Amino acid sequence: MNYKTEKINYNSESTKEMVLTALFVAIIIAMAFIPYLGYIPLGFMNATTIHIPVILGALFLGPKRGAFLGGVFGLTSMINNTMINPGVTSFVFSPFYSLGDVHGNFASIIVCFVPRILIGVVAYYVFRLVSRLFKNAKGSNVVAFACAGVAGSLTNTLLVMSGIYFLFGENYASAKGIALDALYGFILTIVGTVGIPEAIVAAVLVTAIGKVLSSIFKQKIS
Image 1 (cartoon, rainbow, N blue to C red):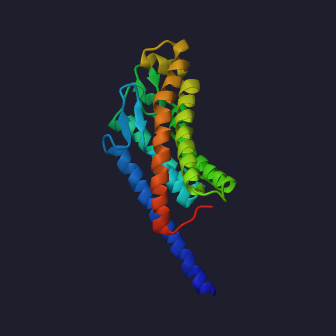
Image 2: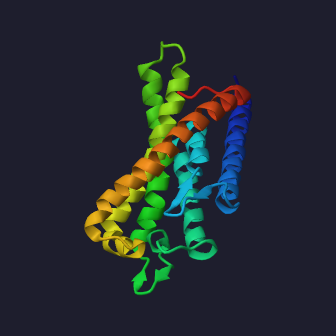
Image 3: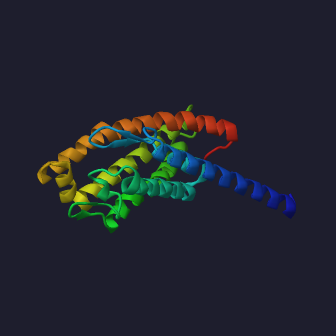
């Protein structure tokens, strides 16, 4: 293969990745701002499905672009909690939102962005690990997709709730109207009633959509 052909192939691959990245960004933005699509209100908090395109983007585009897509997710969350749909606990996700004497701050940026950036990174490496462990097993790709979906989803849930507990515990408990010593149990309840179902949904959707995308793009993730 000569230099010219290599350059054309490189440009073609680079263009495909840019187009796919733009597509996943558009999906994340649409899910974030179309009511009941990306955030599903449950009364005590919102369940989310926005982590799913972040996970898929990471699996097909790599951990760096997955981290970028997670950052887009975090940005939409900050905008949502600042201007579009603020709630009593929006200060944990936005440094620009205040509730009485409680103000969002730099810790809000950590809670809002760090877990979301790590969603795709964790999902990508879990997929690679599971694929290698079961590389000779039938249906190994299905298992790898499902594990990546669970890992990415739980990364979001566990890191967000841990950040809230350690960085905003007292203020979050006060905003929710619960005693501080009951906060740990409250957070465990959220993880169990919201985080686990989100992880199951992510496993199913990442597997189903991932298999379809693999067929469309004829792309093997390694």
